[in-house]
Length: 406
Image 1 (tube, rainbow, N blue to C red):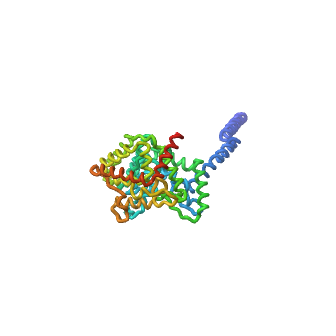
Image 2: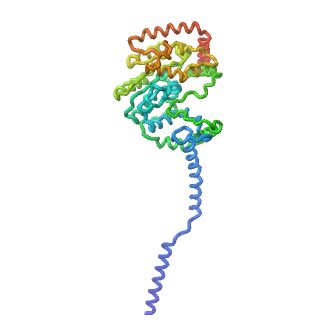
């Protein structure tokens, strides 16, 4: 009995110690603490970067509040228009949009009295787009606002150049979405480029800490660096830029197809479409002429008028022939006109306060009046050539310089 009891007791203790060992809590190893430390060291800078970029919001993507002296001035916003405007559309869902290139972006004001502000008006024009990009942003607007009612479309000859590719900042994946994409969100929050932009935003805001800036909230972004003494320099640079990008202009049937699709899309969705050709300076039209694309330019107008009525503000009229000087009233450079001229465009196409609009500024083109109109422009060009030999020589000189470089 004693032996048996002793054996039973021994077995019980063995089981006890086995169970104790089995359930014993092990002490954390040094690798565990190292991994935690490493995770914190990696995550903390990323989290801080994300918070700073969200708070400063240099591209104005997250609609965070603007704090005076902190992020009220956003110098990199204009360069990221394809990003922030795509996201604005998902948030604002306007019923009237203004579409086109930077000419339209800088000059057509959504707050002008011709528009019904109660329905929401937004300037969706982009820097240097081809017409495929324009069409895709219109489709993005319709996707987010099926009740879109009106489109004001400023078209430019260069948009239909087959050599003009999508801009690097264009992203197909962000369009026809109802929110910011994951890819855009990660890039905007956690990239070092955005962090650098945040730094520039803080610096600019400190320098101008008194301005409560709402620049671009409705997509309207007039040129903010249009110091008049720089007019002549800017004219030279913009004429050269046209030759650099478009001296080998080839009309794109694909971009024309995009234009046709946009017109048809408006018809299918009962959207009022008002189309106009931008009134760049006379030297812009002469630049087209010296590159031997004038006949292509005229044929482009014929094709547009056959498809839809179009207001033509181009050519050689009392607005576009303003003398190049250091204190111009109508232009920032030879491509971009000022908002006051944009107001005249709106007056004409909406039949609003037309007494303020010069008689020779803006003609509604149809197939019936097209040839007469084109002939008038040719005659006005001859007058301009005779009266402005120095500007004619400037265009020719810059064309020669750019061709020698290329």
